[in-house]
Image (cartoon, rainbow, N blue to C red; front, side):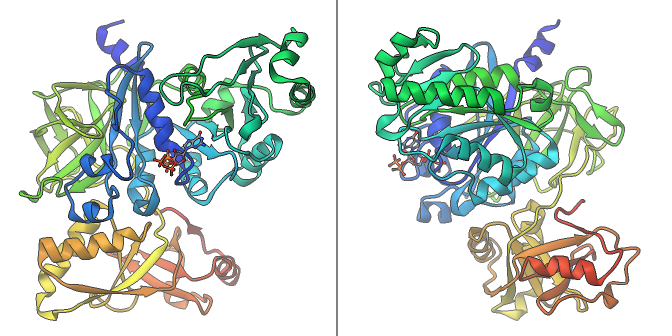
Length: 531
Ligand code: G4P
């Protein structure tokens, strides 16, 4: 095996998905603790502190103390080179959050043990399912009172439709949290939070066969319950099957507490053992193998104005195959040009580092003079293939955009189109009229503010946004077979078209979607838009 193949094979690239406050940041921070490469103080953490430092490129972020961007963290652990893709959460939830998942090979799902599956997890999970990537579950905050363990697993199975396979089993929760039972090793790892977050608490392993010792350490009540639950579990739960995990049909589950750093390293080890090396990716010439094929990448995110002094953009690319060398010439397929990528860099949480080389599985950011679009393919000059496009994700908030000064029509259209090209917003027109009326759709409401701010600051155009009540959008899959003007919808339905003229339907109520399908036999609607 060449050095190059080895580099690719040791890469693991994943995203962490969760609902805000489930503990994603804390878990990421603890992961980093185990990797020596990155200093840990405040490197990810920080609603209040670090996030300012992370990206102070946009006034709006400073004002609100939140991050509109997302970053990549790379660290080494046990011979692996790990890339964690940060998915923006909170109010800054946006299409980028979804797109980040298009660049990951697997996902870690963090669930708050007292809450179960929550809204944002559900949405992100859908994207994982669409991609059929493996999902690993960490049930967090066991040091607080948790829901019943069986119910938590049931919730995941019912809400998300994925089978669960617990790798360990919690013993109590909250004040009564005693540790976890490792199903493979058949032993109990007792809980200690004395090291609060600095390192894994000193674990004591007790074989479950040594019942007397078990009773001594965790107490009779907890021991009785554990033995009973484990018996039940062995009879009831899905068999562990790595193929099913890899296909995204079965999620391995670990319990722990990120804050007190209990169960985190065990989870990381299990995860690394089971997750995949960089996956092959579909292109118009077939599957591209990460090792066999020379360098190729696709753009999954474009971020504007990182440097306020210049109106520059950074295009984020996921390397899908081969080795990237900063000096080499590459082909930008959609732009039809052979070029060198300008200032390739690795964007870490709080720093940017100019790169000389990178490998399949890695994410690089390159300076973009406005030529890249989301989904573009970069490959070797002698090649000319395209990766499968990144879907357009459904916005959930819509507003009509009105220009305050109608004289600045040109700047307005230019600005809004450029911002839409970066993928922060989607723009639509009334179905029957032209450009006069623009409707903008976003995944997270913060994007409305970003749009307003950027149009004012970068294009000198003032706008007013008038919120619309629609929350659901559907793409028409078989538009060639359907006469859109004769479509019978519901009273809360609105027909719009995107900038390419494709028709779409907006709905206020979710049930109207079903009714519209019933009323129009043969109509096929999609939740994702295909480019
Ligand atoms: P997020 O990135 O998913 O939004 O969650 P984050 O890690 O920021 O965690 C949200 C809150 O939950 C934080 O508390 C954090 O300390 C707490 N937390 C995370 N993991 C655990 C855990 O295992 N047990 C307990 N008990 N708490 C946990 P906060 O008070 O909102 O923030 P902070 O003041 O600690 O920064």
